[in-house]
Length: 386
Image 1 (cartoon, rainbow, N blue to C red):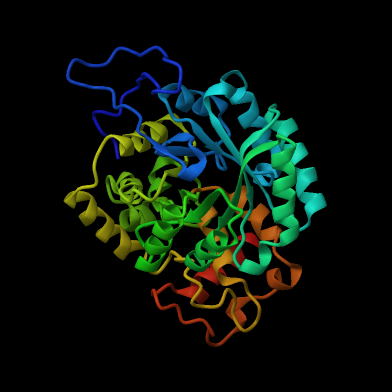
Image 2 (cartoon, rainbow, N blue to C red):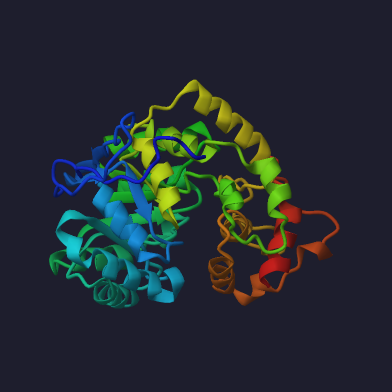
């Protein structure tokens, strides 16, 4: 995905951010300018490309992104056993006034959530979070009154500015639910070019109601990163790359999400300066017919591999395997080359789910309407991570 415009550069950061120095560009090159959108009714301007810090271990990439005008940085209490927050805090300590920091709690009780928040603030070296998400909620019942109260307590204490909910599954119904409850300022939702139109419609309804919309998983599994030297544990990178890699497809995927004006920003995981520079172009280049063609080819390639998180399977098979969760975890290893992260998430699943072996079933009870080879992918996940 190399592009002649994706050289090293620094640029003016935008209306509400400080101006930083610009490196010398080739005579024919123009430094793209960051694009900003207002995050729902919060009034906060965020860069259309946000930085998902989950897979990042190099603080200099985060620092560089901030210097280039990216101003939204997303982490979580659970990422890298808490080490991710510490790294993000160190990278942004001197830039706190000009950036928006979000983190998440996986807690199920008010007391645990508030304890998580205090830990997050300490690790991030800040006295407040701009957005604090209740993390990975897939059903309305998981967004409890207890947790919503924790967010309101944190708001009154000045520890958070805005309350959020993140969702990986049943996105349309979850978006409608948080809008109906009326206590959520920002939603973080899975959204990419593989999704059905009803998710786009739900995003539009949420944004119309004033809820800020942050898109994640916009790369639909991250399968293009395989040619960058990422280790794919048991998969031949050259063979998989020949099938899955499409030049420019990941940039096209980001542009696809951002062309929806109801999406305020898309957080994308970036591990190095090359990925940052390529993805940055999504704020400067419009979605084109060529991008449409690239995504059509990419869609055909990943169709049997990538779970759309549509909820058609009900979230688990008849034996109790949490199908969407397991396939999302597998994508961390196969798509992003993050085996340690995948293993960490796998071990967070209930022991009863981890012990099931799909290869023992003669036939799979889940028939994916999108053509994902469910039993094959689950068997791989269990062999790789169990």
